[in-house]
Amino acid sequence: MTRDTIPLPVADLSAFTRALARQLTEAAAPPAHQSLMNMLARAGGFRNLQHLRASAQAAARLEARPVDEPADHALVARALVLFDEAGRLTRWPARRSVQILCLWALWAQLAPGGGRTEREISAALNALHDFGDAALLRRDMVMLGLLRRTPDCTDYARIERRPPPEARALIRHLARGWPGAPIRPDAGRR
Image 1 (cartoon, rainbow, N blue to C red):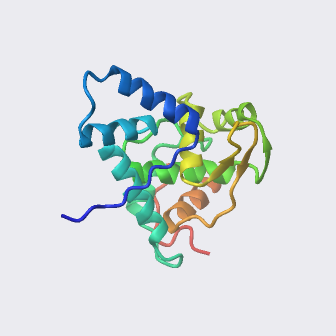
Image 2 (cartoon, helix red, strand yellow):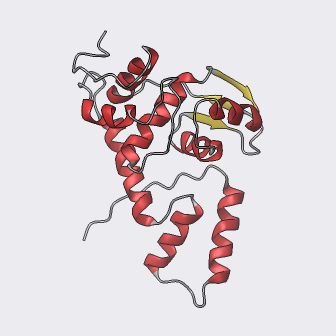
């Protein structure tokens, strides 16, 4: 049986080790291989190993696509319904591929550069969503490489990258105004 390589991004090593230590002390016996992998995934902020694997696969699919490849407009449409008339994210999507697109849309609305504290980046993210979980958005953006932060979380910076085709289409559509209008396959092309 071949093994998949699953990256486990750890944004804060201290929080990761505390969460892992807590899970290990709660275990009655030394965990089996699968149980330990689930513990590692949970310590990294995922529900379980399956959630970590799905997250890594979705990110790899979006990143591996050629830049000039046309966007999957069905995926963009699934993300668009999550934004209100003001372009704010109203709820956190269940599917990881849609979550990643929404994070790109939020990333595009953040000011470039760094020098922002955790409180400042949280305030900026809170202005962009309605469900009140800036910490979730911050952590995911750091794990996806959209934001960079110092180990002590005192300095956050937006990392400049070229978004994948779906993210570019979503960003362009949101920049034009209310996202409730249907998406045309040629929308977002320049």
